[in-house]
Amino acid sequence: MKKLFALLLVALMLIPMGVSALAGDIEMTILFTHDLHSHFLPSKNEGGGEFGGYARLMTVIKEQREKHPDAILVDGGDFSMGSLFQTAYPTAALELRIMGAMGYDATTFGNHEFDYLPTGLVSMLNAAKNSGERTPEIVISNYLPMDADTEVREAYNNYGVKSYTIIERGGVYFAIFGIFGFDSDDCAPNSGMAMIDPVKAAKDTVEQILTECKEKYDAEPVVICLSHSGTDGEGKGEDYDLAEGVDGIDLIISGHTHTTIDKPIEVNGAYIVSAAEYGKYLGVVTLGSGKRLESYELIPVDENVEDDPEIAEMVENFKSTVESEYLADYGVGFDEVIVNNEYKFDSVDEVYATQHESTLGNLFSDAYKWAAEKTMGQKVDIALTATGVIRETIPVGEVTVSDVFNAASLGVGTEGELIAVYITGKELKNALEVDASVQPIMKAAQLFFSGVEYSFNTNRMIFNKIDYAMLRGENGLEKIEDDKLYCVVTGMYAGQMLGSVKEKSFGLLSITPKDKDGNPLTADELVNHVIRDEDGVPLKEWYAITSYIQEMGGEMDSSYAEPDGRKVVYQSLDPADMLRNANKFTYIVIALIVVVIAVITLIAVKIIKKNKKKKSAA
Image 1 (cartoon, rainbow, N blue to C red):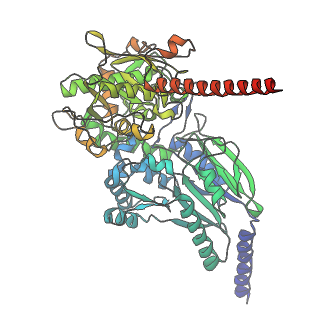
Image 2: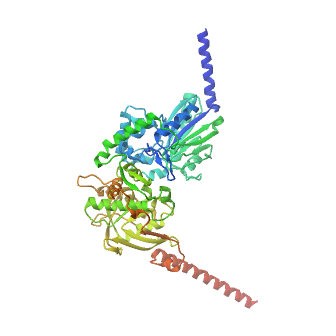
Image 3: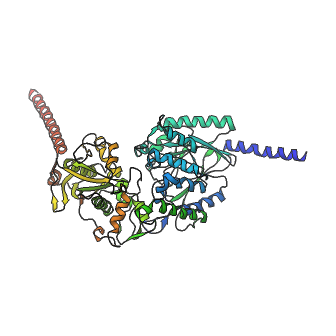
């Protein structure tokens, strides 16, 4: 009887837990990150100190688990692509394995998980599964393999990728699903996936979740969306629209835009939160009664946090994996110092902030030109890079191979490789105009060139801001000839962007990459123009920069101490500056203004004459 009574007592004690979960009377804590980008090691702050690093992040996670034993740990995607560790993505799945060791319950796909193309994603998922180690669940509701792509579907099934998962923790049911945003899809042009409208997919998924929880557990879950869509940092954006359009979501972990949200944004009963990129912070959300916000904190992960020894050892072991499986082919080491740098280069934020000549952009484009000429054994007229592919800066002091890779880490599949194509002089001028006219509305489109100098007036007419442009040739400055073909070297990502200029500029500008004979190339054909050495090894962006810096003899070249005048940006309303080398866009607008003034003048004259006649008649 005593044993029976004890069992009944335990049962009675468990019943209130389910009721409490339904009523929201117990603590519900969610720990979260997003946009980790393979940043296993700490990053350097511009003003000194460090941030991030998985060993330090693990220490903070453990501290929070002591305070909140029933907390769940989730991630909002882009867990890969951003450091040398990504090079083992398709073969060893280091990112998912270390996240598993850290106790992540669930994550979702970001656009960079598709940088290695569908074949790379398949290999990564299978490598993670075959490791036999614990890995986080992957949830994604609206970014799915094509019906005919059986290989990707099989890899999804093998790993266990699903639209949502339900986790019970401390009597609370957490229902977690993943959403892929429109901009993320734009940033993954080679994913090969089929996208369902995020709002529609979220509505359907939330409905399934609520039905399952009611039927199976007779409980109302905490519904969490791991969204790789983002906000603009001011409360708007795709995740704001998602929350507004879908009922029943309690929390949105908002990734993709690398946003820091200091105070949760409440929309339609959902809280939108973000904790910056690269593990700068661990986000902590605690919901209380009625699933209302009880507390919210972004805990800094910096040099004041001690390493967790287990994760620190794991990272060091992964370094060895990268060195043996990847870097050995290039003859360099992970932490090998390649130059001492005494000059401050722009931070990534500074590169994005304004239109200007950046010594960081100059270094990248100069390196591409130098390395391409050395590899191909021929002259390259112009090299260029874009703000959107610059991921970190080159630090002051000792610069390692790892530092350079982090700065130029955008992809290792088709992206991340340098291509050599041809464009006409007229199209080169259009490319300069993209830099001058498109950047204000698309920060990632700012371009940095080697082999050309130009200036533009920001007050001039859009698509006619350039007022001076010349080639910097072997014999000094040379005129750009409209019909001549020029050899251009750039990364695959920027090359694809050049091909989309016509669409982005509403047909007003056009740049079509071509082969040496002037035949137009499609985006799919660009892969055939990857620069390769005599052994067929493709020239990577990071390695072009590394080898260029190595040629400097141990000290950063003083030419990068300050800008050299290759791009001059100014503001002027002087008529001479406004009309210098004006093109058809300016003259069309001037003609329209003249016509409008003429029409207004004619109407005014008629009105005056009519009034005079009335006065005369009176």
